[in-house]
Length: 114
Length: 111
Image (cartoon, rainbow over all chains, first blue to last red; front, side):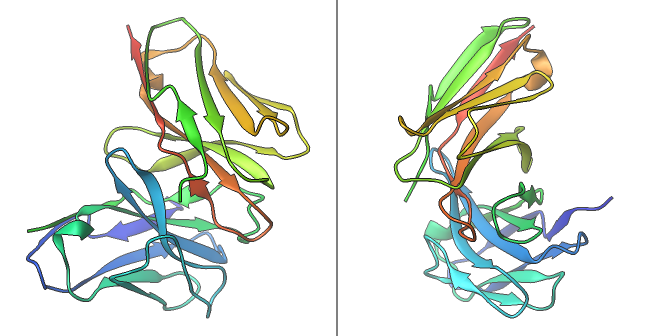
């Protein structure tokens, strides 16, 4: 089915470990986004890529890096995980980034840092 | 920072009743969107209303927008148990800015 695919679905890390969250979309969308969702906080934007070759910081970028590998793939990297990064991470995509269309979300990665 | 603020935080109703959720935001917008999230799942786009629109309908959903009050409401008519979910409003401030989400309303529809 067309959509946004995130891997892995679950992950447990030790403090200081690194990992990369993968996201791929097959809808030929230009824009891609990484959000985190914490209880009672709604979704907060970490980084986004308005188009292939560009990335920009969102509201909460500290401790993260991103790579827009190609038009389909947008990865999120935690270089040295901290307990404060325990969260559910969602990737989303949008046709043009103009806001004129709804976003398509992946099913999320539930990350626990111990 | 959170742009939208949903009210109430939680709502419990009987099947067949109507559910109304409200969203207030702080700055001018290009459009406002509503999303649904079932427990443990990703968000699903429900409806988008542009700043020059006042009302939109989609099936059992009715969304209104009052830009003078910086507020929107989502009405779900004839609620079903399957409507149990969290509902989020999200705003786009200008053409290319990303969505900014509120904290959501948890809706429980009791059969």
